Image 1 (cartoon, rainbow, N blue to C red):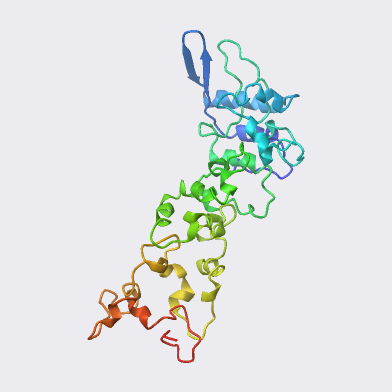
Image 2: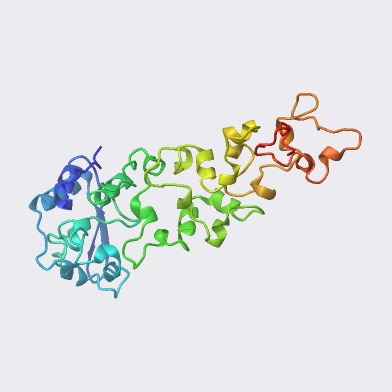
Length: 334
């Protein structure tokens, strides 16, 4: 795959040569005169030829970020100055982009990009990462992974759910800011639920985990970079994940309830439900999915006075439903 980068390959120039030989880009070029704006699109062959020549030359600016800030100076929507308030803009950090080739560490060698193009010619392109970028998710991520490939929390990125669904790092992360919103406990859930809209709805149901109050964040349970588990969970199973907080429900117990041992989500909706205690259904309906008087879950489990379907129903008597250590707790009543 063309997104793989060796750990010692620390410049975009080396990466881009291999990338451009195998990948087509789509750049739109604009030439202006006093009256008209003409837009023309280069063919794939022209794009590859142009950018391959540029990256092979590897012409980096002697002035570093100063070359870029002539245009990206904060006075337009192409503000490049905000990179300096965040970690990626630390000039003293030799391991960061600004401590190496500055802006060109991520955007490639400037070449002739900072020169005014001749009439009828386009401005030489750079690698970009915004929504109008010609790069696909795999190509964008390969730039980020040039540095972020040796962190143990990201070693499982390839094959993870986000990577498999062509999610780019920049779809979630913002670099030209003081603090990336997804790293903020107050903002992370908003970033995640901008895509995971079903979960956003569930968080506002009657019973839910306290994510909507920012007392809990998505990454408390999920690892978006390094998990091949179901739903990108941190733990290997749903129960292990749940029990990392709900340890009082953990066994082994003398009398164990089978669905509790198997999977917490059999009874509970992890992101939210309209029933108390995150239950997927009200009791006794939930209980009667497995327990019924005639061996069929659609038949109500009732007796003469109907007390088994009133109030808290089954839980009026079977209060130790997660398991019991009482010698006579086989019915989960003690």
